[in-house]
Each structure stands twice: as C-alpha cells, then as structure tokens.
Image (cartoon, rainbow, N blue to C red; front, side, top):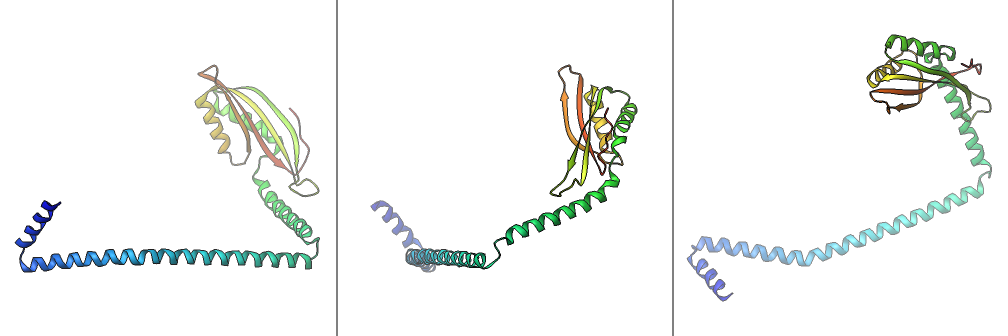
Length: 213
C-alpha cells in the first residue's frame, strides 16, 4: 500500500501545473458527488416511501367512501332494481341477437340442401369415397328468449381417401358462397396413407322441420 502511494505521489509530481489542477478538480468533484449521494439518497428514499404511504392511505379512504356510498344507494334503491335491470338487459341482448341472426340467415345453407351440396362437392373432388351421411336431431336455440329464435340442423358425414384430398374437400366446403358452421372434425389415419375423416357441420333455420337421412 505504501509503495502504491509512493508511486502515485511520483506520478503527481511529474505532472504539469495544469494537469495537477485538473486532477485536483476531478478528485474534488468525486468527493462532492459521493457526499451528495450519501446525504441525499437516503433522504430521497424516505421521501418516496412517505409518498407511497400517503397514496396508499388515499386509495384506502377512497375505497371506504365508495363502499359507504354503494351501501347508502343500495338501501335507498328498489331491492328488485338489479333483477329488473338484468331482465331488461337479457331482453335487449336477445332482441339484438335475433336481428343479427335473421340478417345472417340469408347467407346460410338451407337444411334440406346440406346433404345434396356436400355430396356434390364430393363428386367434384372425385377422389374421396363417401362412407356414411346422416342427419342429427335439430336443436332449438333460445339465447335467453322464451321461444326458440332458430333451430340448429346438423349433418355428419364420413369419407375415406388421402389426407391431401381431405384437406382440399374441407377447403371447398369453407369456400362455398353459402355458409355452414363447423361442429367438429375427426381424422383416423391408422391405415396410412389411406385415412377416414368424419365431419360434423351445422346450419341454422327458422323452421324446426328436418328430414332425417
């Protein structure tokens, strides 16, 4: 340590007057910085902690005020008001849904056209073999309304062939100008490269009439 101090002193003695002044100013600035850091940093930390504590207390007071206000309003209001408001909201949602569904109905495949349309797409594909095609029981869709808004009609078909041809067939179904809803797809590839695909497709109708296959 003594040798290092001696070496440092010799280096300083070798400096010019201007260089010594710069070293002195740098050392003085470092001392001032360290002193300010040691003095003011704890002060700033305490100030931040106090601000956080004050903010937490203010939030707590605001929460208590809101709870008191809510309880006062609850006692003053009609006890059936929340139930009535919920009923009104459900009716409004049902009405909106009915309007939207009825507007969408024109773009859907008619139930009686589902099977012929799917078979026609299979003939266009030409490489898949139809193994089974059956209809599913209709399901009423109420969506909160007392009477059914729509009836859901489903068809389930199973085809066999190559995976690529199955993908092409599903793309063709997806690209139809009229719309079907996908209910599910199950692929059995145990006999690869041949495979079996079971598709469940749905449409919506205002009529419950459904011809079973």
